[in-house]
Image (cartoon, rainbow over all chains, first blue to last red):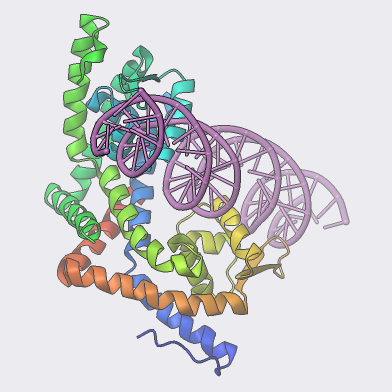
Length: 163
Length: 163
DNA sequence: GGACGTTATGTGTATATACTCCTAACTCAA
DNA sequence: TTGAGTTAGGAGTATATACACATAACGTCC
């Protein structure tokens, strides 16, 4: 399909060919569709969370700290599907703003993350908003398609990870 | 494991409640699932593109420049589902590396973006890799589920945008 | 009990993302 | 024309992302 175009062709021909093939490929580009959907859904939550001064991604981190109890950096990074070093940077603003604390574990290599009292209060205010956003989407999307979508996403992720 | 929150017993109750609710909400958290899937799929393409020195997101930009011909910043940003200012920054490395050029349009407010000859050559080498990655995924995921997933994503995006 | 491989994390660097504010250029009506 | 409103884009700031490298602490094997 994407036969390498010969250099002999004029630029115009090359441009036209690239344009046609690219548009075709774009119709089934999963990356762009995932990006669109992720952007759309997180923007819904971002707007709801704006008055609280945090973003959807930050809520995800706070929530997982709560869910996991006192995770290490690596455990928390896995839970929120981020690179370990990314999470380290993400914790900066949250710690600065007083929502989480970090301290050394018994194994002094690891750093444990916990919610502060402020962090717990923020989470209690934020979680209902997330629930509300999700329920609104589910109601409008349909419960069956919603579960289908989640299953599909799960399977897609699994397939890629299997190698 | 979860024990460090024993500063006060009242905190314990709060934590437990948060933990249960959060885990529940997480089971149907679309944001995390979309993030996982997007990360997984783009990493496949990123690895294929590594020898060419560009990433999946950069290929997306180059491709859309080709598809659209000579788009303005705003047109191109819309096409790749990025904020306008984000795209401006993204064009920096691509222009520095000689893959795109920008120039003023007849309306001197707009900046037009075009592929350089180097950019065209890079795109010709990169597109087959993207096609290969996509076909591999489709083969393993199944064509029917694949199309279902794309439709679901499209509808989800549309629902959010409708307000 | 020290040398060595392993593990958990931080830092430097670079790209990606987007909000707010600012300026230049265009349009249109008076 | 000229002034007001609109539009395209850049810059400042801040967060998000992650690779490569460095470091400190752990465990183990002699």
